[in-house]
Image (cartoon, rainbow, N blue to C red; front, side, top):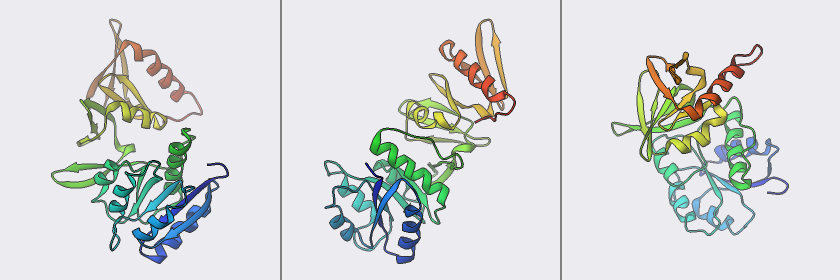
Length: 249
């Protein structure tokens, strides 16, 4: 992506195209912004092999955003996909199509900046610094309804085979991702793997125990074990976050 990203905004509503294109052009990592108002027009634009990513609306007449994303899975080198939509209902479908991000309209500059960072990370293999104000929204399915949980609400996550269960203050949610994938994605957001079965948000650790050479932490009413191999890393992270002039992640 020498010189910045070339991205394509696809939406059937002109004001939405103009607003998103304006925000993207204000990002220093974006070199060029092209636009298309239909899925078919977007496919024609894909003749340009320089396109790094599509910022794609889901509900469009004719070829929908999801349909277009499915077509792209057959490309040898498809551009990255960021869905931009007013609807939450398709979030699970979007992530099953390996979307880099899923943005809900209206999109703010800070949240869009985080999506661009993720595109850059996918294209270059270098994650770069996360946008500090961005809070990831995780799509979860509960009783047939898709809702979003903020990452900042997650206190810890527990491994369930190829899935993970997220625990907030009052609820828990099973998500279609492994604990290892969450560890890789959330390490910069203040989460630490303390055990093969648990990933913990450092900001929610109330106490740390060491008894008979074994370590555990208390998160609310839960006491979670810490493996020997992770004890030192946990202690060091907690000490750093407690120093004067620093803040917990």
